[in-house]
Image (cartoon, rainbow, N blue to C red; front, side, top):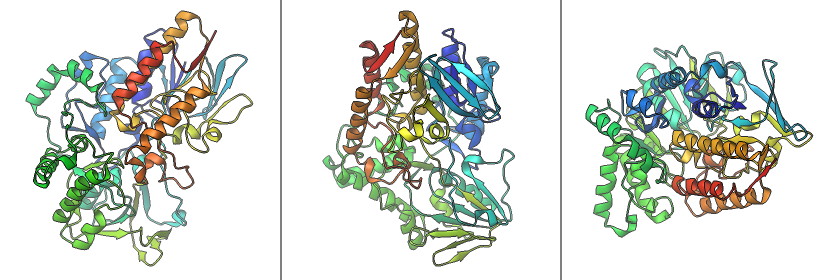
Length: 528
């Protein structure tokens, strides 16, 4: 069995499948394990799920032994954790680093995958597990003139491992999504002057990060087993947040304000979206939460014009991934920070010394930072030439948008599993929980095959069609499609607008997967 990707998904797949006696080999493009946490080393990089939750659950000894220093894990701390897992479970001996899989071709005759790498490896395997990640293909905008820029430029997802010191420099940051929101306060504290170029304002909530309270940690660890079970029955895969019982429109304005204020002070995105039952399905209810946050921005940012630019008005709160920040909006009160709206005045080109919009020229800049995100959810898979012998490539099959059954398999591509693929909750849930659930399901399926003499499994086209239709229907019943987000590929020019994650909730999705397995892998074709 070949596993493509050495991030959190690939490592657990290796551990779980090796434990079942499979001969597993992992191929990882980076020089170290960690996936997105290996590459994303930009200033302020931090997880937006609390550290006690964002961790593996498969080993109780591991979760009891590991100590997280803060409420939210930083990139260095999460990478240290991942490396600890790789060492603790002796995973490195089956991982080949600095190796990018370039093609994977399935032979119906031999019923095996033939994979090739950029290191001239040729590998034959009965099964292929794509653990390529949802946010692993950085998008550098194709601005005209980038090659002519005389300063240095960086991308948040391709950050130099040695770090960057912006002291004394004039810096431009392009993009105000999650990575931009995290890095802008820290770059502003170093740079002589920072100019932020914003196309789309995003909602951001205070993280309220702090050192992890020892009493809270002890209590959490004592309850870990129950918390993990409880998480399985929640929409986002995170326990500890009481389910809301009322619509935002069922309470008075004063009560709503008190509730939102309490959640704002508590910090975190899940808690805020869980204030009322209908914030993601009822526009009128969502408007109350959106306006609360807009008013918070107006109260923090002293320049009224800047505050209005930072206050999102083109999408309901929560329909794009909510950002968490530490002093993001406060940063715009600094004398050395400027905000430029490039929605009304789009960037035309990068110049030798800066950049030019339609109406203005900006610079000189010593450095330009692209916080422009990723070709999310499908980018890494589309970069590999995946096909059945003499058949079309997966990238061509997905030309109008990704199609999967349960986000786990693609019809027409036998014996190839995808971990947290499009059509599964993936980025709309606690990712490590989603990874474990998918991997465990795949492991159970393989055991079923081995025990019953099956050599090949693939998704039935009709079952895939039904699932794709269901994923779209669920999305259309919410407010999510109202936003031009990376959930629909809106940040990638020419990418078809298709809502990719499953937003019916992790609990319901898990129950569907379990039912499929219990019904003899309904919707899958198993052959001897």
